[in-house]
Length: 88
Image 1: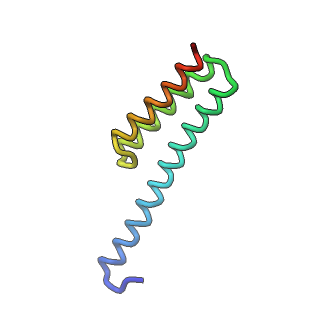
Image 2 (image 1 turned 45 degrees about the vertical axis):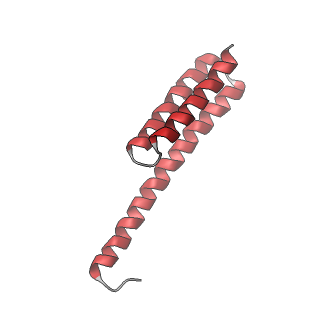
């Protein structure tokens, strides 16, 4: 544990930011997982909203600094590609 007041504050800030990052990463993984689950069994009418929601969650993660923009673009491209492959 730090003894200096500013170091104590930095530790508190780090804990808050870590908790925020964990929440955002969890939401990201959940959104992608829901899309993949609907892709496996559901019809296109049910899958399209899940895809859109997954893309929105990815964009939010980029805006919050959790994902790099190129990583997000790659993930979005792969999800869209998988969706298009099932619709053919």
